[in-house]
Image (tube, rainbow, N blue to C red; front, side):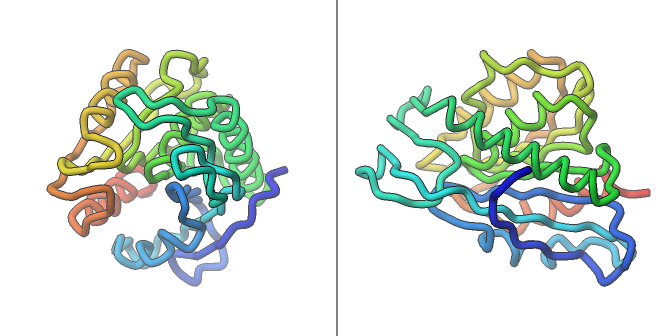
Length: 222
């Protein structure tokens, strides 16, 4: 069972929720960060999706002078490879998988569960989704990278998993080259991610949000 605090939001007031999106924030943010995005996705009124926004534990972050803040794992050094605490990332992935199981216990089919994450959250989503033993609905990876690509043991159930990757062309925090490298790593694992870039920095962008809404329609539509 995950002990992460969560915020939940329904896409409409339907009594019977039939899909879930678990959305992980970036470094230093919290579960509130992407709540305002949900209405901007402009999902159809008959979609009954539960959005789950967990908050990461607060830990010292090396690249921020050891300041304590919500983080899915410690980042030791910023460079084109990234030096991170992989054990911490995998612990966060395990917590995310516990949230998946929580949705299954509440009656959601596994193939109707989507993981979404921004920056650090996206890196955790790659690990959590591709190592999960049952087929998921998909992954949305925003302004992120794939630090465990070489060590991850991908589950056969995730072959063909829909993946949407979006990145800013002017991102100073996570260069777009790392987004492209993530897409290449996914391709090497047999996946065919959908990749979109935008004229933005390390942020979200309205055309990107619209794209996410369209992608969710394609993955979770009846």
